[in-house]
Image 1 (cartoon, rainbow, N blue to C red):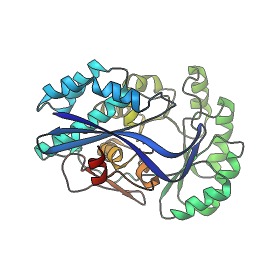
Image 2 (cartoon, one colour):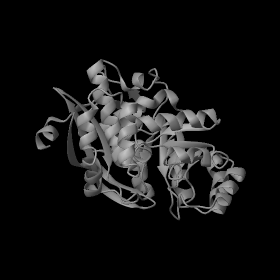
Image 3 (tube, helix red, strand yellow):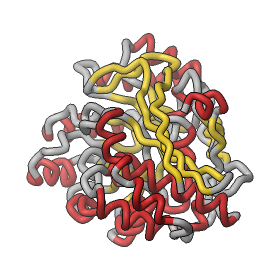
Image 4 (cartoon, rainbow, N blue to C red):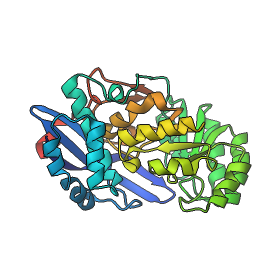
Length: 345
């Protein structure tokens, strides 16, 4: 196999703000694995919060060139184990190479990625559409631009959280979920859960910082009147057991956990523990979204709108149309890379 790296900048339709800051474009690394005339693709994002940029991702991925050359026709799960042994601490880089391996192996063998993971297609779980932090007027405008989604996820972590949710609730009868992105205290999270429930909110995602003491998470878990879903507190497989009894569910992101191989294991483990399961995304192209969507059978909730937020996509693959996840009739993860990007690579 041959490795090619495509550092890519994805422009957004609008500036996107969460509690930690604002972005106007997303830097990502698209990874290509080629065997003969067939190429598989994976993607990971650059992310200052987790300490990843083009240089760090390139350094990690180039360390895998020897194992890639020798991998030949290894099943992606076995290939992942070999890659993890070389770069165990760079889950972002691992996620891109793992996703690319599934896409390639599936294309070579006429199988979808979900079939290779031992799953069947389940298009019943609907994705949410995310509204980043902005003025209330702008957030209403964003919702009105995408009026037919059955679920909206609202980013919070402002002095005006109550006013934001109240205003948006007046605009829609859709399901609302909220994501505080680590911005609340335990006491505020519990207080907020009461008025959020009155406004018909379904759950709260990551109210406390990722390094919050277990006692703080326990307090929210026991006293919140809404389910609490771990995101930043659940990065890798080892975190699932730690979240059990402190959160009602987990949000798995392929970039954070290392790809489809560990992601599927995390979701199965959480279900065995009686926890709710969710797969989310960064703002990323259809390369990353197509890989994440392969896990749909294992989910209670999905948040796969990352490519919908882009002004320009890098690929064609799994599509999200008003929340409905539409799988292409192609093997692997169904990814066809943008021709301009292929030439640029």
